Image: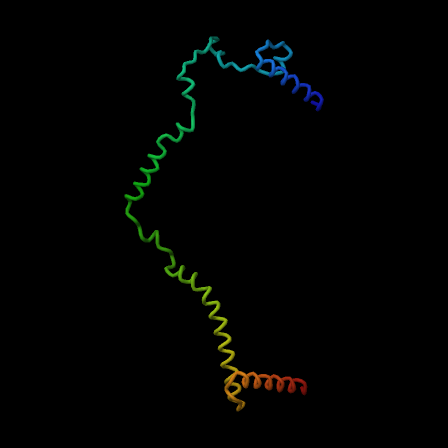
Length: 158
């Protein structure tokens, strides 16, 4: 079906729909364009008219009917769960200290860095004491620089 034919068919359906809404009688061409008729008031099996009551209109499934009693069921299920004995093993974590480790990791990262700096300072002080220099940090750093220079000179001689 080409675009022109599709647009013509759509125009015919729209015109027929407008006429039907206005209450006008449809001609045969327009009714054919609308497609099959729906038999809302006619029962094709028994070939008779259907009788509708006001109750039939209200018998349709609605959201209100779907959720009717839902709150009561939820409350009953909740009471059943509460009535069951509370099992401590299902609540407790598999590793009892998992939350402690999670909280402490951030603090331990800072402490680890400071610990490494303190270890380096102590090593420098020991090296400086062995060389006979003062125990302060500046002396240790000077001793380390002299040691590095001595190592560089020995590497160059080889």
